[in-house]
Length: 103
Image 1 (cartoon, rainbow, N blue to C red):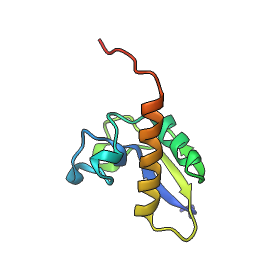
Image 2 (cartoon, rainbow, N blue to C red):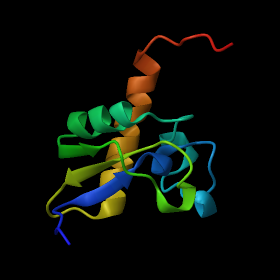
Image 3 (tube, helix red, strand yellow):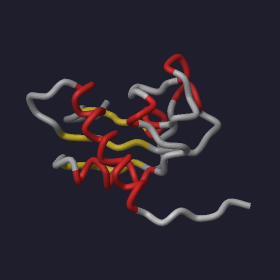
Image 4 (cartoon, helix red, strand yellow):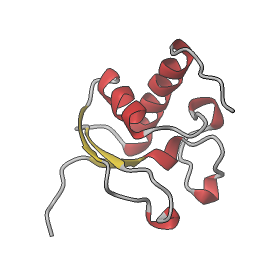
């Protein structure tokens, strides 16, 4: 098995529609509705991390949903700190982007 450097960050960690038991890892104030993989990767880059995007991977508990994951290289930081920084950037990205009307 290939050894990975960094933390695995799944999109479900930032999904405001999921509960803690369903996989969300950040408080709702740092979560967004239906986060996309490209948004999470961009938020990690803005937070200052090197990222590797793996779009073909699926969160094990939600294997039937599309998602993907990002491998984040963060030395000397705990995973929770990394997730909170990414969540903060993700909320900023969502606030700054124009909202599309859903039908």
